[in-house]
Image (tube, rainbow, N blue to C red):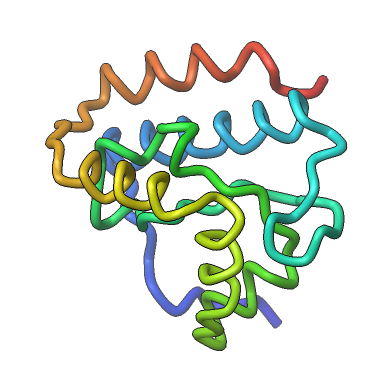
Length: 130
């Protein structure tokens, strides 16, 4: 039986460009830091989590300062179960000054365009595994 998605994904050029840039960014960090540890539990990190959500700040969407290495388990705990301890551990580890700076940067504005997303994708595509 064919799986029916709950929501249809937009097929607009903008959405495709943003998705491609996001995928390139995750691939870049997996390749550049293959031995990265989860900042919450110290297991092997599988992905980069956006501390300030992508929906809240386009400016921080591709900022290394906002990308936190997490394992799948901690990522699921945070997003699906609302476990605040994941973010609390990150703040304790990185410090109040880091959080203050990040919150200040989150108020900056950036317009994500198809052109900008394609430039970001090209920047990070270099690191994609073959």
